Amino acid sequence: MSEQSATDYTQVEGTPPDQDELTSVFVGQNRIAIANTGGSYYAFDDTCTHMGCSLSDGDVDADDVTVTCPCHMGQYDMRTGEVVGGPPPAGVKTYPVQVEDGTIRIKA
Ligand code: FES
Image (cartoon, rainbow, N blue to C red; front, side):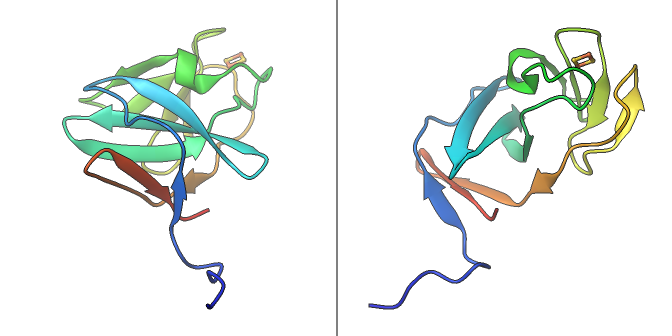
């Protein structure tokens, strides 16, 4: 059997989030947030770069495609991970994600 290459998607434990909801999963040691906006899924580092709060406890805005940190209202664009509002000093890393038949796969 061949090993998975670094470019492969990895299937992760967890249930895909409902509409306009977030969840978090682990890929190795990395905790990654996954958001669902109308059936489009976004994956990004779950740890806010401001003071480390969990972005998966935050709120999704489907229109702006942003996530708002629950601690100090930092906002990130979920497509790029860039900061679009509030105090975070840096963006978060984003990851390609696939959700199919209740299964989550992330390229991390
Ligand atoms: S910890 Fe996220 S905005 Fe402060």
